[in-house]
Amino acid sequence: MSIKLESNGPSMNDYSCATQCTWCDGCGDYGIWTAMKRALVELGLAPHQVCLCFDVGCHGNGSDKLAGYRFHGLHGRVIPFASAAKLANHKLPVIAFGGDGASFSEGIGHFVHGIRSNYPITFILHNNANYGLTLGQASSLTWQDQPMNSSPNGIPEHTLNSMDLVFALEPTFVARGFSGNIPQLTQIFKTAIQHQKHGFAFVDVLQACPTYNHFATHQYLLDRCYDANAEGHDAHCEPSKARALALDTSKRIATGILFQREDVPSFYDRLAPRKDKKTALVEEVGKVDVGEFMRELI
Ligand code: SF4
Ligand code: MG
Image 1 (cartoon, helix red, strand yellow):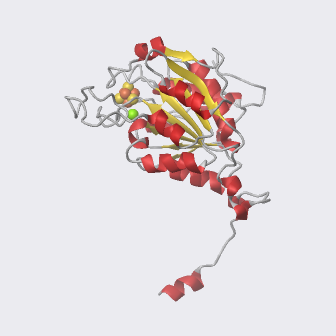
Image 2 (image 1 turned 180 degrees about the vertical axis):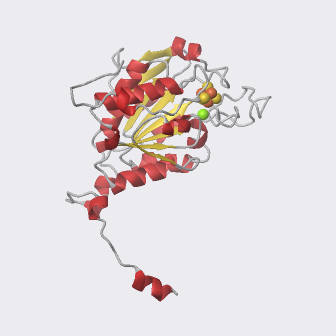
C-alpha cells in the first residue's frame, strides 16, 4: 500500500525502482530503505527534489533501488561528494549513506571533518559492525573478540567507540535508530533531514546483518533498544548528558534524537562570499570560454 499525503503529493511508489533487491533475507537494509522512503514521502519531497549519495557497501547497492537524484561514489568518500553537491546547491536536501567499515576506516578523515565542519547534510550510518559486501571482515566497530571471516581469533585492536568520537567533534545533531523499528526510524530521518539547515545530522542506525553479524543480531538489538525520547530525554540538553546516554550501552541502548542544537552556523552559512546571496552556486554557473587559457598552457 502506498502512502499518499495529498492528491498531488509524492507516494512510496514514486520512489520504487524496477531493480530487484539483492540484500540477504532479514537484512536491516530493508528497514532503513523503507523508513527513508517513508520519511521523504511524509516530508512531501518527490524524487526530483532530493540528492541521495551512496558509499560502497551492501547499503550502496540500494543506489539503484530508490528513485531520486543519486550518486554512488568511491569507498569511504561519500561525505566529500555529498557535501560538494550541497554546497553547489544548498536548496537541495542531500542525504549521504555510508557503512561502518568505510566511515570508520577508509573514510574516517572525511567523517571527522564532516562533523567538525558542520556541513549541512544528513548522514545515515548503516552500522552492521562488519564489512558485509566483502564477506564479513571485521570493521573498526566489530567487537574485539568476535571471530570474523578474516580474523577467526578476533582482532588485535580494540573496538572503536564511535559515539565517543562523534561527541568529541562537537556535533550539532546525533541520533540513533534500529533497523527493526521502522516507525521510529522514519521520525528520526525526518528530523535529521530537517536539521540540514543547521548543519551535519548524524544518524547511527544499528543494523541487523544475519549473514555475518552473529553477535549484535536483530533479536539482541530488539531486546536492548529503547526509545529515550519516549522516556523523557530532551535532545536539547547539555552535550555531556547526551554523550553519557549514548555511551551507556551496558544494559540498554538509547535510541531516538539524542542531541540537537540549532545555534551553531553551518559550514555554508559561515562562507563569507555566500553572505546575502539568494541564488545557489549552480544557478550562477555561466558559459566560459577557456580556449585562451588552454592555449597559454600549451
Ligand atoms: Fe545485509 Fe549482511 Fe547480507 Fe550485506 S551481508 S546484504 S548487510 S545481511
Ligand atoms: Mg558494515
